[in-house]
Image (cartoon, rainbow, N blue to C red; front, side, top):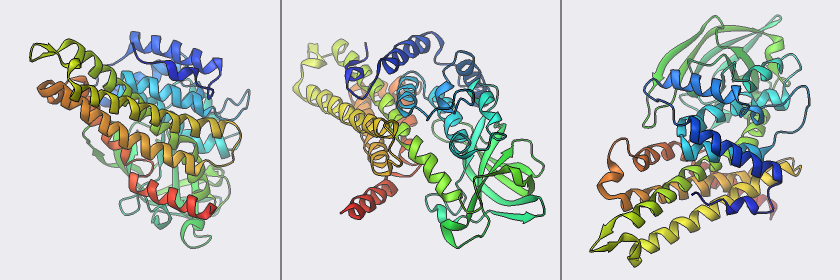
Length: 382
């Protein structure tokens, strides 16, 4: 039985505890799904999650507007990740892909949100480019004003849900000023003329990823999200909300690795006794439990701070993502070691966790970038 004691921490309300309990029961009945066809699996997962109401936290409810509940987002990601990494991916992208619409969209643009919350439309967040991943300010893709339209030209890469998304939030250079101040955000339909899949990208933990080409994709001026030149601020505001949820997903992976390891060392005998009786093994389990709890404290501090009305949680979210993802990697590596040969056997749960965790230390700001963010926040506040 996974440790649930953290739900009694003062960060949470009863609704969060109920969410964790009910979602865990749902996951036990519905996950994992067959990952053989990753596109089909994601479509199935989004449909199931939407059908049963689990996508509600990912976007603004236009009939009852309220700020996004970051603690609910984190609890959901942690729970889903513990059961199925692809389910976490499917959930997360519905939120990240529509975050700009929830925070800055017009009422017309926000009509998409009821569809994504119900699992009837797939969303994507198109920020990274071949030569500008973490360095967003050096983006090269352009959006040129042409009468009552903008014409988008360039490429995006490592785009989650690339090739299966119904809508993309796309960032491009509109040139109001140099660097970060000259970027804007646009809502682009997945079937827009000139939008192509230049390459499908395969990674160690299969997810639907693609490099997208924009060959003079024309969108109306009403597709602009916020104002011209607001793109960098919009992107950072979205990441400010969702970055701590990446830490929550890592936490879910780490909890599963710890649970599997506790079970393994209790059942496996070594030198005539359970592995759990060896002090070295106990040391590994203690280190893993410590890292899990410390990561949870940072993740849910960041989420609670945002939910309490903080305008920005850049420092808290960066700390949560950096620590939780890096420590989850260490926890899972220990789990592999404790499982011996089984730990590297293809298809074993800890082997899949080993592949799942690695990308989280890169996307939405790599670990090294998070250190820069934290340092600037700390020194700027001094």
